Amino acid sequence: MSTLEKAKPAVKGKQQPLRKVTDLFGDASDRARDWWGVQTGVVRWSVYLALIVAALFLPHAGIGSFMSPHSDWQSILFYPIGGYILLAIGLNVVVGQAGLLDLGYVAFFAVGGYTMAVLGKIWGWNFWEIIAVGIVLAALSGILLGAPTLRLRGDYLAIVTLGFGEIIRISATNTDSIGGPNGIAGIPHPPNVTDWAVPANGLTEALDLDGLKPFTYGALDTRPYYYLLVGAIVLTIVLAKRLEHSRVGRAWAAIREDEDAAELMGVPTFKFKLASFAIGAAFGGLAGVLYGSQATSIIPEDFPFILSATILAAVVLGGSGNIPGVMLGAFLIAWIPERVRGVEEYRVMVFGAALVIMMALRPEGILPSRQRKAELAEGSGGMGAMGAEVGGPGGSDVEIEVKK
Image (cartoon, rainbow, N blue to C red):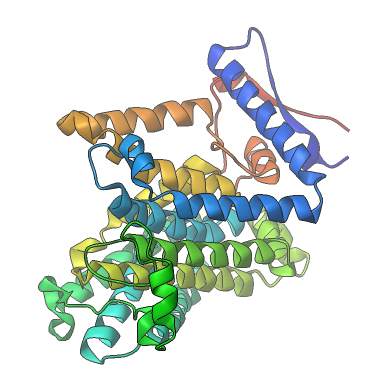
């Protein structure tokens, strides 16, 4: 049996309490994955459908009263929660699948947002056309960034990508044609269903439940934008999973585990790394277009470096390389500060403490993929030189025991 399947941490001496908690959670996760692995397609698609339906019911006021008693639940469900999840799925392509550390991911989010603002407000383009252009421009930006820099590795690559994110923000601040520091206001909303065809009026009226019109986009109700975002997230998940199990995904895994060995085996590493940057950037551009369509105005300060760091933290916290884990990490990163808003000036302290506790219990992430977990245990965790070795609660007493 392969090393990746059988690499297990063995702890010398008495097991620590944190390790016991970690092992219990890990065993439960492994059992759930084993169960899922033997299910038929009918069961899997039924679960997928149930999860999508559950996501559509999340904006209900009864859920919001518990999840976010101090904030408007419908608003934060679209952004930051939904926006962070879509951004984390995109960054996971770069960090989790290809093993490249990108600290300037917010730049692609900004490209999508400004594409929506410029083409929608200044040029009067249709929303659906802007989505296509925003995705293409963001992907081209990823290629523009990756082409001269992807021969770098580790912290050098991280520094260059960080600089790219700041270049985009500062350039937007100093460019008067796109509003300069004041940004662009009056961004148009997506077209309503009733704007497409007259028969759609009956559909909209039929779906008008409790004052909700899911196909009517305005400034007061964020739920229609949330449903649009759910559709985008579903599409990106499908695309990301198909890539993961394709020849491209296998090449990314080889590059992540050992780029030199992959190169020697004939994998065109530069081409596949550039593809990961372009695809991840495209997801970020999509998130930016959707954000701009709801925000109605954007300024350069909406895209700071801390947003890149936050999305990276979500990927690492949730479990780099595993889409369900990445989505869970993004949800927690976005939701916890809003849930503890009632403690006012102490909420950042509570948020930080929660992250420290979770990472102490699960240094490899809450729901890491099995292959990624084995790589981290072996000290070949990807992300260049940063993140190649992850210590556990057992500290120096943790060893790797490989069963043949």
